[in-house]
Image (tube, rainbow, N blue to C red; front, top):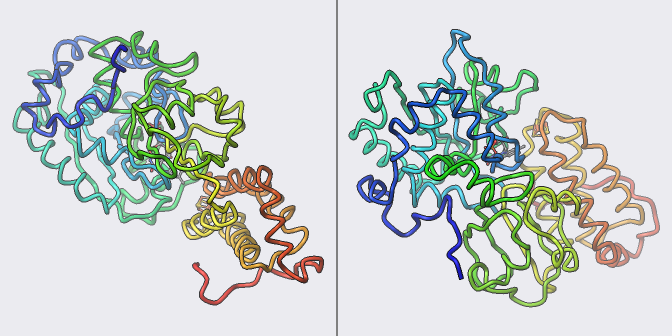
Length: 436
Ligand SMILES: Cc1cc2nc3c(=O)[nH]c(=O)nc-3n(C[C@H](O)[C@H](O)[C@H](O)COP(=O)(O)O)c2cc1C
Ligand code: SF4
């Protein structure tokens, strides 16, 4: 069987943290006339042709995003790496940064050249200490070899990278909250427009990209945009780094081509090696993605088109299968606790609405549910859409709707435990000792 191409994880376990090893493995070969002979627009065109789409969750085409960054405004252009990785179930970026930090640096140099930037910030989740150590060490080595700093490769291009430690809030992964936090302000999302590409960090043009997105660039340059596009599907090129956790025989980080069947990722000996128990459902792309039933998983493939056909999302690639011993009411209760806790509080539908949903789910779980609660939750979920500054509240609403619609009888069984379930709900009471 032909070996699968690994765009981002090919250097795992090979000691590529050391610059000499990284170079021996072909690293930094792009930081030469191969890159510097191309104009900024040729580089952007090449990235567009590759079909690379952002790997942080939204899947926005990377080359197109770069084309929005204005030139010659008299302001600096900043590149910000989103290494916050707070989506529950997602753990690929910190492995990528620990195992292959030079690939991120090389990707950043390519992005820096394309965007006419001379400064990049890597915004890393504060708790990821081994990543921060690995990045700082690699950055020092790159400076020592003249790959960063002034006049890289004897050109007029100068480029600096700074590692910035975040303070640990899920919302700081949203790109405008991240920019606020980087500036030293409260980590709260900004109203858009203006979009960061036009007015981001310190009101300057700013491009925010995920770690994995940038780490695909060296491979695209070393091979070709067409080769990268051919690895994926019609609407997106390349491979994806998946984080598989939950009820499988072998959890881990696996790189697979876009379009890989869900069940292949979960059962193949190359990846997660099989379901532990009997499959009950799969959350396909991180906690904000609607769940898939086993019969849907049999048909679904891991790509943008297929996930949207099943009314779910590809997200950040966090695939979380769970077996029949798992209680979906408990699962939804955990999500309600998480999203209401992480709301930054700016928008009423999110600040009040996620807390309200959480209290209703919590009371259902505690045998205090009422008839009509499920309709109330579905209605709340609808009310989050289009009424908030950022998608945090809809990120609870979408999985909540799917859990209720797909496992309704399990929620109803809990509600029937309440002897007074037929009486109307007066309010969703605060429960002393409950998690807030
Ligand atoms: C609540 C919330 C949390 C997010 N967390 C992350 C994150 O941890 N990492 C990330 O790359 N993108 C995250 N995003 C998406 C970013 O806002 C942004 O779309 C992404 O960093 C853009 O990079 P990409 O185009 O390379 O995907 C989050 C979005 C939201 C709404
Ligand atoms: S939706 Fe929630 S997290 Fe997002 S800006 Fe509004 S209050 Fe903050």
